Length: 77
Image (tube, rainbow, N blue to C red; front, side):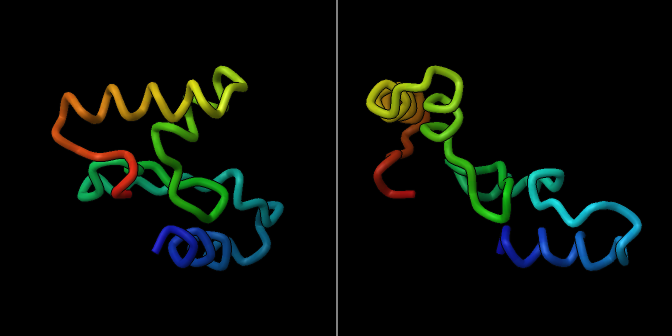
């Protein structure tokens, strides 16, 4: 869905801007983890934490801890 919406936005611009999926962010609040979409894919909390810290293991642990408080499993998304 994120990919399709990203492509639709880029198509709608009809070449007015550089076709760069990194410029398009999609928000899907119905999804507990991964409410953000970028680069044509869903971005999870673990992705964001990994990007911020550079440590994939920490990113995954951080997401699991934060999401557990909401009753959401990071592994399930």
